[in-house]
Image (cartoon, rainbow, N blue to C red; front, side):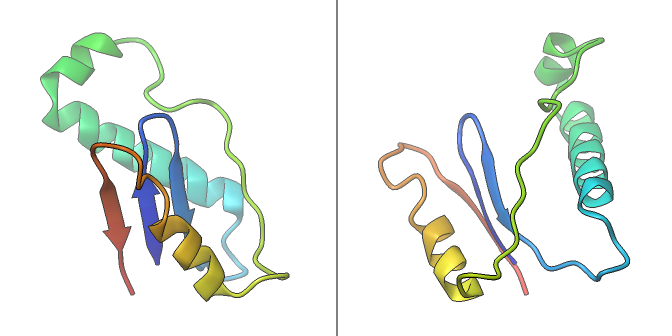
Length: 91
């Protein structure tokens, strides 16, 4: 639904059905994005040959105490001090 890519981490606001586990979602997102990045960028393929592109861990929390709008606004405000931003928006 919303996202921001920083130099050393990624913020994502996602909505998943109860039948999908968070660990499975993260596994697929990391796997698919890693495959696509390594396929498209040869210098990444050389740098990460035999290694992991993404870190092993992740942090996840539910939005029970705050609204999705508050979280989306927080993500929008990420990286305003950085030179380069990459923002993901969706439905």
